[in-house]
Length: 113
Length: 112
Image (tube, rainbow over all chains, first blue to last red):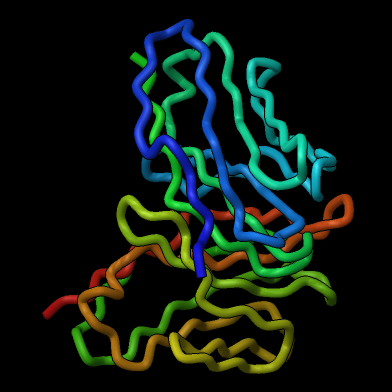
């Protein structure tokens, strides 16, 4: 079956631009997670949804980062006024329920110039 | 949060078993040990997980010590395609679900 998909795979933005990254979870998966992965580092947790409810956003690095999942399926991670330090791979994962195994998408590589 | 400690890198000869160790000395009784791997430019891939018993699936075996303070992931016959970063993770319960805390992982090089 289809796995987690993310788009775009690559995004180049000029400093100060807003970007939107999309995640399509596995069909039927209730839980959705966003992670940020800097070059050479392990992924770091950003935020977690159960259906449309954002239950944990403790990992979002600043108020420029905003995530939503309005219908409990597709999720969008938005970064406003991008900075160079936002350059990273943004990974999305989904699981059937919050406590189940997470399956990851291929990630979106964001480069801020 | 329980933390894990892994070697930075390891080498393994193709066809041999790769044994990747992980220390998680502060693990709590209800926390699972998960292993993921990440091949270059891809998202992390689930390998295996366990609580206290040894586990085996088509990809690997997981050996957890009796005191649960450490574990070993075993790839029985490593191939070149197993070259990747391997993450040992202890799941932390949080607000109705689990957030997964990754460390730096072990970079495994499988050599011909």
